[in-house]
Length: 293
Image (tube, rainbow, N blue to C red; front, side, top):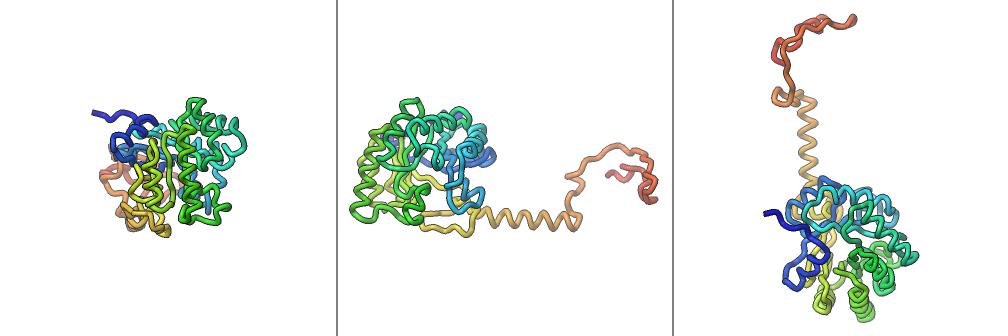
């Protein structure tokens, strides 16, 4: 029997049921279909596409229209997993009204089933307004890549008492604002475990240890598509970069040697007499198809 389509409510209920949430990013229909059929609970159309797909140094130049375009591709190919889409930089920070408008566009044009935004208690008002508009919201605290310039890089957050207390307070504020789940990125595992135990909503970790209610990874990272990216929190489950390289080298060798395409990969027809072009060589006068080609 086909599994039911996962909803934001279903993901929230997984915490009380003791079921862990498995989530990965997806940016196009081909990957979305493969990841969905593999049984993931949620697919995140992340603004990480700026770095993972386009090769940018950060996520800051991804626009609302661009991420809606990618989300629509993912939504078309997804049958079972819940589709979450990031609100990109400056699509929700200006005002609560702008936040609702941006979230609505991702739902209406992108096919998103919920949205995710970065930030703590300072965005509780925006979250509450989006939820009030009927759109589920996933929060995101800890390392927030859209604030990379303010944070001074991609370091672990919450290692001292003050920042740890701030993250704990932010988590509770986001829950109170209406978030159905919370991403915890790059924080000490002890803090992540404490936050998780303090919340009614599930936490989904990335570099936050095993104490979270679920985990998320960028699909290209988990599948070994970027051999130069080796953060401590990343586990590679395949080495597709190497496998693709070997496959393409084999293809190029066969094309150059004439081994591809062979008869199996070619079409045949009945023999037909073709008149050669005026400048054609005598070989062109041969009966086309006479040799079974």
